[in-house]
Image (tube, rainbow, N blue to C red; front, side):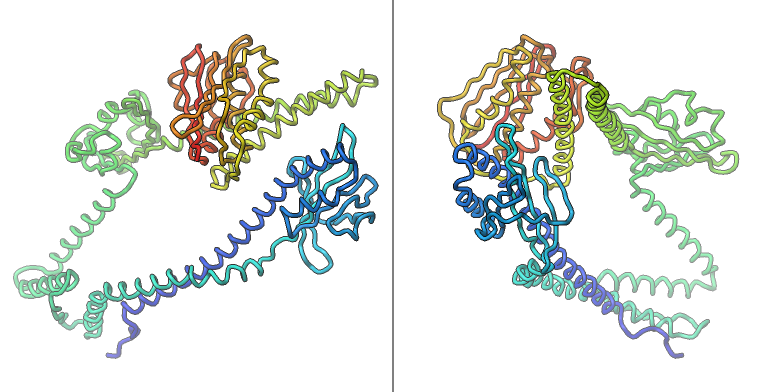
Length: 608
């Protein structure tokens, strides 16, 4: 009888598929590397330009105050050194170039490109295409001195082309692909060797398949070289025994019993490996079967056999808080399905278990099937989400309501004193700043969770860093009449860090100290160098933190339930972001506190 099986052996198929999918994976990896490099290059260029543009605008405004419009060309030449591929320009209020890195453009009207616009704080960006099909990004920021507008500072950069990135990365791709390809080939050789016994067994099974239907199954043993050949030989021996004992018993019945036992053992192994707890009880509620997950959830992981025969509902009451009148354990509800949640407490931990009961048979005469699942993490996620929604709603609604109220007053009132108008505008500006700070915190937390939060290290004079910190927090201290004490060493070493982010960390901690300290209290900042680290300690005489809340102060969106804390405006994001920034610098941040006596935060940064 001709065979309809393909000639390609099992081992060749496995090796072929292994090579095919491995090559596809390596090719996809190469393409992904090029795309990732292109995205990172464009993002770094944008961040570098935005960082340089803000400092350049400040230098330009200072230049206008000191020298007027003279020497602007030299100033732009200095700016262009930080972005060699860019074009810098200063455009006056009349729309003409006051200065340009291309001297031919000075005095000519500045063209207004048409394209997609976006904003980052005070800076704006226009993305457009020129007549040659090249894509440009023009960044601009307004110039102002003594509340008098001067014009715009602009810088135009050509976006890196994807083809250029691919060509630049082409010389590295062979090196990045060679090692994976070598591993693929090595894996193919190993797979071929490992699948060789299976291929031999496949050949024997094909020989059996070619035999005529109804003819005795003639199976030949294999040389005993590995576990596969030994297993095949055992099957052959069993068939021979069954054939010899056919006259004494029913071979079909023996095979059926063996198959049932095999399936039962297989199903039991599957149930034992499930992450959800599965238990079966008889009509009296005694446990007839329980997998390892049930034993772990009911506190009997090391004594699985001890659960068999005990009352399931009694054991559940011992380890969890559940009343007798709940549907899960009520005697009157045993004939129907039920689902509920119980709280399991043990020591300092608390877990939530979701328990489901399904009757076997229409009247539960055969017992029940129980499933248990630990949903503690899901509950925590739901609580965090609800807390975030409440916090975000409050932080957005309050300033928006104030902005709307003062804006309507300004728009509807026919005559308002000029000082009152300024006060209203200042309030609106303050609320907008509050909204912007909240959005910035959310974006920073999102970047932190996505792993995209980065720091730009550079040498920083520590004395200037803390001077900037003090200039930002002293008005708040004076406003609340807080005794602000500062102790700085006479000489501090230069540090290599991201100054803006470290300033934000210290200002955030000092701001919290002032916010949660009553008027007339004391806040102190002590800075010293010890054990190769810079230590900044912020101490206050404020509300303090309860012992139960002390380990949660650095969690996202956490705010104490203390009414005094809730009365203050806050999002619960500052300390979480501060801890991540300090960690990225290789440092540590810790807290000590006593309720109603004050708190002490310690920020430690390595000197090298």
